[in-house]
Amino acid sequence: MLSRDTFSYTVQARCSRAEAVALLGDLTRQGELHPLIVGVRRLPPRPGALASYAITDRLAVGPLRFPVTYQADVLIATEDEVVTVARQRPATTVRNHTRLRDEPGGVTRIDVEITLAAPAPLFGYAFRQARAAHLGLASRLGAVLDRGPDAPAAS
Image 1: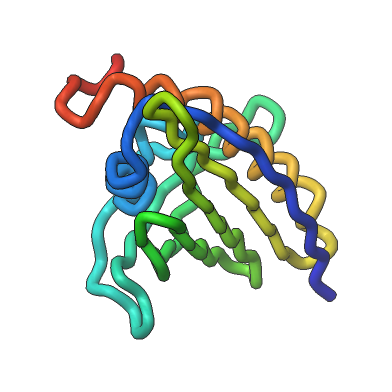
Image 2: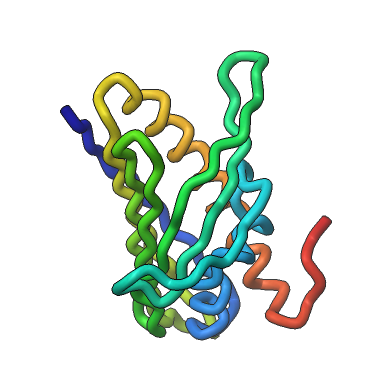
């Protein structure tokens, strides 16, 4: 039996929507943002996807750290929204639906909704990991976008 839950967050950045979409729709750049990602490799796009990737996270269980690789697809990447879906065995999916809109003063508002589905025995751990990682990503996203597209990545 699958369990499912959703969380959301909002980030504001001084950038264009195009700059935000360029970052959020290119998963090879997620290592700048996502605290668990240790590697991203582009794959041939799956049917219905604009782009597909193999992503490796480093997860922790107590003192142990272990790599987990999963597939992620960018399904939509327009100036108004970005939709990605990540799939990991067994039967775990993370759907990221990001909406973008202009606000006064050259600010872009980024509203993100994350929905995670996983088998009931794994759900609590997976949801806590996903929420912590994506809120960590959110804390970095505004600063990365504020730097501009030509600034070097933070170290």
